[in-house]
Length: 207
Image (cartoon, rainbow, N blue to C red; front, side):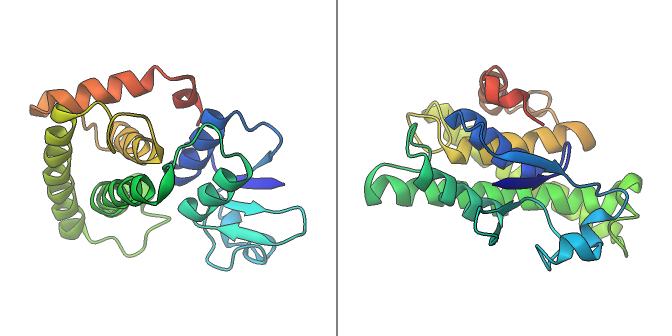
């Protein structure tokens, strides 16, 4: 199998971190040059018509896109260690937190960066600066909520590390690099402490 990825892009990083946590080493990682527009070229779009990474090419030639779908596939092939929940109840609560982190934190960070960072202008046209700023404000509201969650429990979805932690961590690292967002500097000490703990995991080193 081949995973089409892009260095430092947050969604591919989520899959790479997921793979690292599971010890998956038999998937070839194929870099895609986003800055050079390779993802919009005919060769890549034949694999993923939406021109997005990551994309997982299976041994039979089918291509699976969307980060969560790829992780679900990998969880099925490599069930241990479990990262998506044991049994339907835990799976549901893990998915709830993962989706909240994806839609309320990760997506808002991405929108803020896409519409306010001059370096992203070639990839995001047109940019809407006011929208980007508002997304940054809404992201911080979600981060404050998550800070409260982590004041009560050690991990995003409860007592153990799951895919929800991967999504939240990659989101915050994206904001850390391009928004200079540091939770601790804005009074979110629990979120900062959690981020620092996760950053010590070997899987956090993958980019």
